[in-house]
Image (cartoon, rainbow, N blue to C red):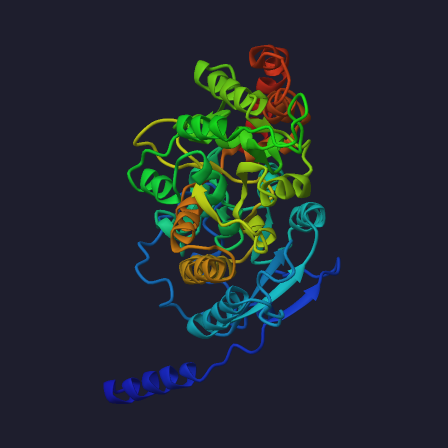
Length: 501
């Protein structure tokens, strides 16, 4: 064959590929018999016959060297279907109805992704528990479930321990060193037991950012201004100590009756205090309930002085005479704030939609650090979504899954910029609040405790239940920790053994 003829053939191939379409994204409700079988060309849209170097996915114990991916959109999946089992019916659904500009931005991004890397997205909407059971049943039978799984962070370790998901560090078309894959510190949080198991769904996690809303009128009454607080944030001087001082100054008896009630003005009230405020204080103090060492072993860290001090700090704030705890009744806490009877409201940023009709002006701040020049870290609700790659994909399907996931997370940053702009325009009263929203979203931290605590009651009792049982009460943190430590440590060790088998 002449070089000239070969060049013409190659040119024609390139032209034909450029006209290959993706088709419409489809979203369906899952049926129990939907599976991808290895070698099924209909699932990938390409010839899936394995060559000698494709006999395994590269994750059978041998370490695969990942690419240094500069532009994840420079791939062509040849029209392949990318099937996603998802706990969110709209996350990967281009047919979803957009009610906001940021919704439309997400949908447009998915369509752009299909076009750029030449694929077709198939969204399978299921519950988290269905994903667990179907993944185990399907994968243990030697078949493949899907290309990606979108589940909750607290469900992730169950999939890991059941050997149903891949170590994404071994996926040859992924580069987990990229910042856009480590949103919420997901890579660090999911690196344990010899693997890295998930990345955060970067759009869903964005609006879960924890922060502090403040009433500007009340702030002015105690002799401060919003510009003062915004300057503190910029100068990295916004601390837990400053939060406490201002909250204490805001306390005022409004009804003239003995004792403080909900009709009086408080310093701070809380949305979902027991489950989210204390873990965020731990993040503000830069401490973890569980830590992972360099070998991937998870160690119990609750009894460290730093953790105990952070838990006690959270409890002291909640029990203080400037705090009003509404027993987890979010709407009551919001009403307390919107009626001007609380200077601060702690909670996730998406609750700003319930403040839009508030008569007083308000602003938003990232959660403070416990020290000057510290980072404004905050915890993430463990219901946040994470993305995982299930096992038993053929070599080609695994590469496609990795390429898709890398490209999706890469483009998601543009959507989050749109979310920030949308929230600023629709809900916030000033640009500084929008900037602080973006800062809070950037500084969120997933933890290994969120990943594994739900796998065993003993681990949950030795971590989160210590906090839940303590907040607002007089029980010493050390007492709860010591009573549950042994069982928690044993359960963690057993989980690690199961994962490493």
